[in-house]
Image (tube, rainbow, N blue to C red; front, side, top):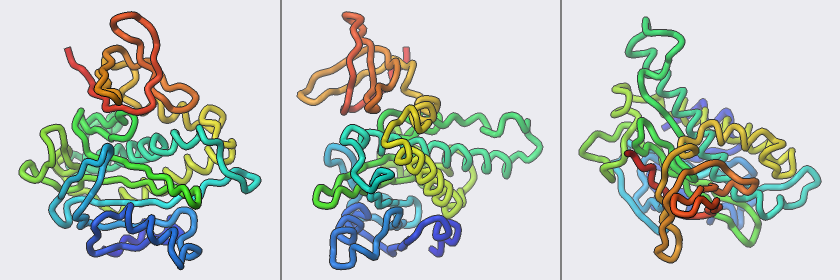
Length: 283
């Protein structure tokens, strides 16, 4: 896969014919003897990942050529060359989710235009809704099309941001009943290079603004962008918390650290959630 559009927006992009995990491969490259050859913004991509990983150690397999596994290397520094504040790192997966949500939205619009070029120009969605599910999933009409996993490299302070995007999976390929692909959602096979380039450029645009503001999500404009794209906000949710606890309530907002603030259905109190599996409830 040549990916000329994506190569044009990344300082280094390597396509692997196959990989166990692009996150693992990029982590090893970024910390190895040739670490200097992997600058901030470098990318590893494959359409054949054999040991993909998600949150909580979950794994999955996908048929070759029907998904993209994307790993992006960040070497975060503030404007003075120092590290970002520790609490700023919680926004990185949200930035990735926002960038992918925007890229998928444009891919959906392109598919709608291709399949119905005379449709309403003010509605380019083709009836398909794209939203970010806090903290790290992109949903198309309520079904997961992309998951994100960010990993900190403690030795260097670098971060590897992994994303798995379902391109052309059919109904027999889907890993779960709550998954979908761009092909299934739109009926049109996506331009993988265009979606990838859109994601990478959008991510770096948001991240550069975030860094320039010293990791302040509000000042940088990151918080309003993420909040506007996040379909979790305003929804009734069930959050499975660490320790087998459960929280039921309304997802109201994101706090300054990117945590999800949920108003407990039982006692009316707000609780900020830093980690947990979120389910959107429908009544």
